[in-house]
Amino acid sequence: MKYGCVIFDLDGTLLNTLDDLKNAVNAALAMRGYAPRTQEEVRLFVGNGVAKLIERAVPAGTSAEEAAAILADFREYYNAHLNVETHPYAGIAALLGKLRAAGVKVGVNSNKYDAAVQLLMNDHFPGLFDKAVGESAAVPKKPSPIGVETLLKALGADAESAVYVGDSGVDEQTAKNAGLPFIWVSWGFRKAEEMPELPEHYAEDAAQLEGMLLG
Image (cartoon, rainbow, N blue to C red; front, side, top):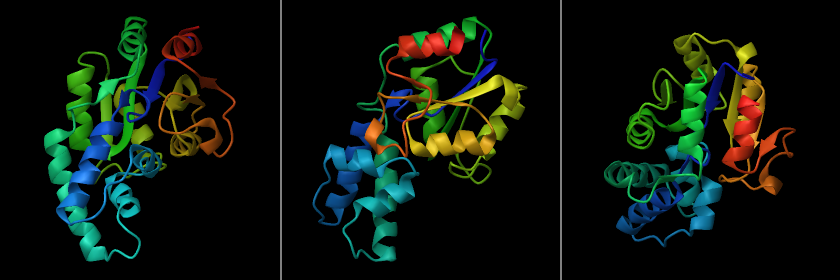
């Protein structure tokens, strides 16, 4: 066993949530008469929590009050539609099962708000993870290391035995801040050329990631 604990990002790493996020953004914009955003635009907007997503999605010059109202509309719509088109990436559920069977602790650290994280993890991966944390009053957004530290403590693991797996520069910085090695996955929301630099360790599919985690 190579690692005793694996901490995963959620959106863009375990689950493809992009269509539901795009639909919620566009529903909120439409309520205020604004033009919709493309999937490609939303892909580039995500990664730093929903408040930052809306800040990036609203038209330039939008007032703080208007942006806050759009954020509230987004949250209401997304809460009701966050699991319509969302689905796991190929091979991910099987990989989580193999990690659990090998005795590896599995944690999830997301910038999505915590209630949504719990719903999605329990729906798509029941019994396949030990603990998941999203943004909350107790866990600030990544790249803060507090989410990782919270998971390590809850799972009885330490940084020396753990690895962080994610799809973005935010995830890479989170791993660095927490003192964990990082594995980048190429199938998520950030392309290689959009990373600060190509990480030393990366996986192009779940089978390759399995070899890196359990090899």
